[in-house]
Length: 550
Image (cartoon, rainbow, N blue to C red; front, side, top):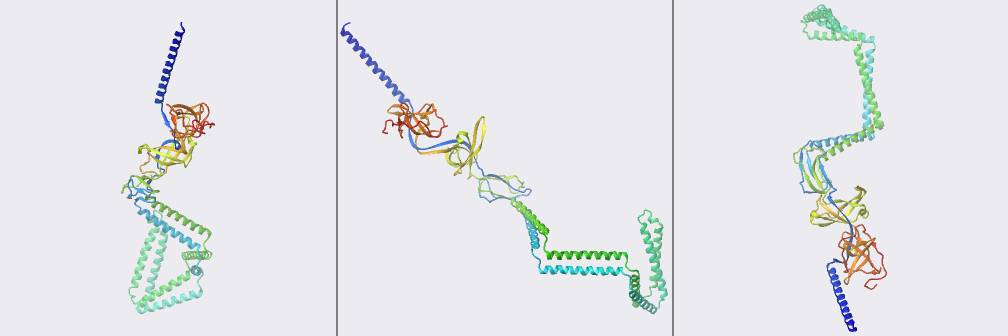
C-alpha cells in the first residue's frame, strides 16, 4: 500500500476517534445534566435548633373532686350552682336541712360552758363567803346531831321520880276537875266510869284478838279458824261497849265537862307513857334520826375541809376530762353542721350537678363535681434512652389535633423513678403541666408533647435526610459548582427533622470545609440516621478549608 493511502487511512481513523470521543463526551454530559436535574437538594440554614423527645398523653385535671353531704336522711334545701359555673374556694355550693344539727351544736356549746365553769370553780381559791357558808353548815349539822342524841338518851333513860310525881299530881288534878264538872252536870261519875272501863276492856280484847289473827292470817284456813271467830266476837263486844259509853255520855253537853274529860285523858296518857317508857319502834326511829344527823354532820365537815383545802388532783383531772369530752362533742357537732353544706375546696368549674332541691340527701353520694381547669396536666411514657435526658423544669411544647394543631407551652413537673417493663421495653412516666392553660383545652383531650432537652440559638442546620452514616461516622454530600462532594461531618443537636452541623471535612483528603448558611446539600432518598444521637458527634476538625480562605 502506498504511503499516501496509509496517511489517508490514518487521517480517517483519527477522525473517527475524535468523533467517537465527542459523542461519548456529549452522552456523559447529558447523563450528568439528567442526574443533576433529578436529584433532591436542600439549603443549609442558620437559626435556633431545639433538641426534643416526644410522647403523647391525655389531659387530666389533678384538682378534680366529687362532693357530697356528710350527713343524710334530710332534704336538700339549696343548690347554688349549675354546670359550667365558676366557683371559688370556700363557696357554699349546696345545703341540706340543718335545724336539728344546729340544736345539737347549741346544746354542745352549753355543756362545754358548764363543764368549763365547774373546772374554773375548782381551780379558784375559796372565798370568805364560801368558808362562812361551809362552817355554818357544819354548825347546823352539829346542833341537829346533838339534839337527836339527847332525845335518844332521854328515851332510853328511866323516868325521874319528880316527873312521875308531877304526872300523878296532874292526873289527880284532872280527875278532880272532871268529877266536879260531872257532878255539876248531874251525872253519876260511877256510871260513866263503869261505861268507860267496859269500853277500855273491850278495846284491849279487840287488839289482842286482832294480833292473834294477824299471826295466822297467811294460812289458807285463816277465815274459818278459832282466831277469826275470837276476832269477830271481840269486834262485836267493842262496838257494844263503845255504844254504851256513847250512851252514858249523851247527857254531857256542858263544855266544862268535855274540857275536863280531855284534860283527864291527856293526864292519864302522859302518866302511862312516863311509866311504860319508850317503845322499841320509838327507840329505833330515834336511833335512825341520830345516824342520819351524824352522816349529815360528816358530810358538812368533809365539805368544809374541801373548801378549805381546795380541789384535789383527782377532782381537777375529772373536771378537765369533762371539759375535753364536752369540747370533743362540740367539735363533732360543728363538723356535722359543716357537713350539711357542700363547700368548694378549691377554685374551679362545676362539671356535674346530680342533686335537686327537696331530694333526701344520702351521705357520701356525689351531688356536685368540680374541676380546676386552670391546673391541667398530661402524662407521657418515654423509653429509657429518652427519659435519661428529661428533667423537671424543662420546657415543653404541647400540640392538640382537636384544636387544629395549635401549640401551647408546658413544663416537665416530674419524672417517675420507677419504670414499667412491657415486652422487654422499659418505659418511664413523665408528668407535664400546662404553663398557661387555654379555656379551649379540656380534660380528656389528646396532647402531643415535645420536651426541649437542649437548645442552640445560632446553629447551622441541615435536614435529617441530608445525613447518612458510614460505619460510626456521619456524612453529607455538598453540591458545589455542579459537583457532589462527600464530607464527613461532626453533628450537634438533633430533633425529629433537623441536625446541627458543627464541622465538616473532605471525605477524600481530610481537609476541613467551612460550611455556611445557603450551601446546598443533597438529600438522601431514604434517611439512614436515627434519633439516638442527640448530642455532639461525627468527625474531628481537619487542617484546611475547602474552597475558601482558612
